[in-house]
Image (tube, rainbow, N blue to C red; front, side, top):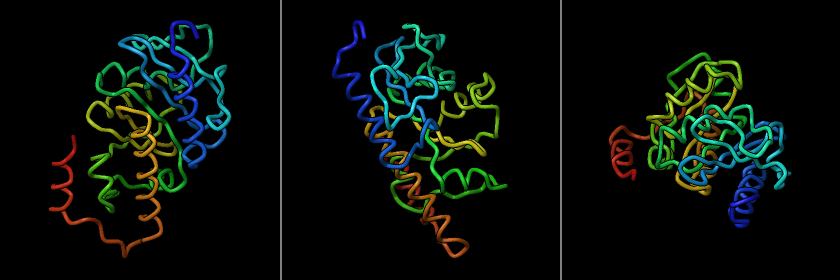
Length: 209
């Protein structure tokens, strides 16, 4: 890739492989972007499998308009990747993932899921936003996710999946892994589960960077 350090692309590909190896995305279900500079980002190409990603499956896009700059076809969700990177200059990585328990909770007919069942959620992720089901790849979904992510680091999309944002690749993957862990605890714990005390949550939220 012209004008892009080889190690930068290699780290991105390795992170995509790691994401799939941890079960955070299956086949072509997930996508990831990594900011290159103020107006360029790497993103996985359309229908690519994160677990098998190669340099041929990495696209360079403009953050300002979401258009490809290298002739490749980016992920259908490029709209919210670009939107988040535009509105959150401190964010360098956007990860769209789909995990079983998190998506099961996203598909429940309730908006009152308390995800604060382990300290990692309030400390690393904070409050979780919820977006209704909107056609994947649409401008409406891109707008809704971008709006929700302007004030959150994690959003769950009804009957679809999750999106998280972070300053680096490791933190984004960690967010996704911890969120699925919390959702597993909620699913398996059922009605007998006790969330973190409110005071503990407020303290952990106050420690976030």
